[in-house]
Length: 77
Image (cartoon, rainbow, N blue to C red; front, side):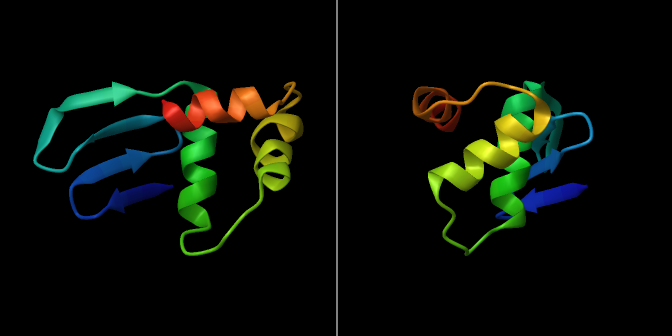
Protein backbone atom coordinates (compact mmCIF):
# COMPACT_ATOMS: atom_id res chain seq x y z
CA UNK A 1 0.00 0.00 0.00
CA UNK A 2 1.04 3.60 -0.58
CA UNK A 3 0.61 6.29 2.09
CA UNK A 4 1.04 10.05 2.09
CA UNK A 5 1.60 11.45 5.58
CA UNK A 6 0.62 15.08 6.21
CA UNK A 7 1.13 15.82 2.50
CA UNK A 8 4.89 15.85 3.10
CA UNK A 9 6.06 12.24 3.35
CA UNK A 10 5.35 9.25 1.12
CA UNK A 11 5.64 5.70 2.40
CA UNK A 12 5.36 2.48 0.44
CA UNK A 13 4.96 -0.52 2.74
CA UNK A 14 5.64 -3.13 0.06
CA UNK A 15 9.36 -2.32 0.14
CA UNK A 16 9.61 -0.03 3.19
CA UNK A 17 10.73 3.05 1.23
CA UNK A 18 9.93 6.46 2.69
CA UNK A 19 10.67 9.84 1.09
CA UNK A 20 9.74 13.50 1.04
CA UNK A 21 6.87 14.24 -1.36
CA UNK A 22 8.83 16.90 -3.25
CA UNK A 23 12.19 15.11 -3.16
CA UNK A 24 12.13 11.49 -4.27
CA UNK A 25 15.93 11.40 -4.04
CA UNK A 26 15.59 11.76 -0.25
CA UNK A 27 14.27 8.20 -0.02
CA UNK A 28 15.46 5.76 2.61
CA UNK A 29 14.57 2.12 3.15
CA UNK A 30 13.19 1.14 6.51
CA UNK A 31 13.87 -2.23 8.07
CA UNK A 32 11.12 -4.82 7.62
CA UNK A 33 10.02 -4.46 11.24
CA UNK A 34 10.04 -0.66 11.15
CA UNK A 35 8.02 -0.76 7.94
CA UNK A 36 5.45 -3.18 9.43
CA UNK A 37 5.16 -1.01 12.55
CA UNK A 38 4.63 2.19 10.57
CA UNK A 39 2.06 0.51 8.30
CA UNK A 40 0.27 -0.94 11.32
CA UNK A 41 0.02 2.48 12.96
CA UNK A 42 -1.01 4.22 9.73
CA UNK A 43 -3.77 1.67 9.14
CA UNK A 44 -5.12 2.44 12.60
CA UNK A 45 -4.78 6.20 12.47
CA UNK A 46 -6.99 7.82 15.09
CA UNK A 47 -7.46 4.56 16.99
CA UNK A 48 -5.81 3.81 20.31
CA UNK A 49 -4.01 0.46 20.15
CA UNK A 50 -2.40 -1.19 23.13
CA UNK A 51 1.16 -2.45 23.29
CA UNK A 52 0.12 -6.12 23.32
CA UNK A 53 -1.80 -5.71 20.05
CA UNK A 54 1.16 -4.00 18.40
CA UNK A 55 3.61 -6.64 19.61
CA UNK A 56 1.31 -9.42 18.48
CA UNK A 57 0.67 -8.03 14.99
CA UNK A 58 4.08 -6.58 14.17
CA UNK A 59 6.36 -9.17 15.81
CA UNK A 60 4.62 -12.37 16.90
CA UNK A 61 2.56 -12.77 13.72
CA UNK A 62 5.83 -12.84 11.75
CA UNK A 63 7.61 -15.39 13.92
CA UNK A 64 9.70 -12.81 15.75
CA UNK A 65 10.23 -12.45 19.48
CA UNK A 66 8.67 -9.34 20.89
CA UNK A 67 9.30 -7.27 23.97
CA UNK A 68 8.45 -3.87 25.33
CA UNK A 69 12.08 -2.88 24.84
CA UNK A 70 11.89 -3.82 21.15
CA UNK A 71 8.76 -1.78 20.71
CA UNK A 72 10.33 1.23 22.45
CA UNK A 73 13.39 1.00 20.19
CA UNK A 74 11.39 0.79 16.97
CA UNK A 75 9.05 3.61 18.02
CA UNK A 76 12.16 5.71 18.62
CA UNK A 77 13.49 4.82 15.16
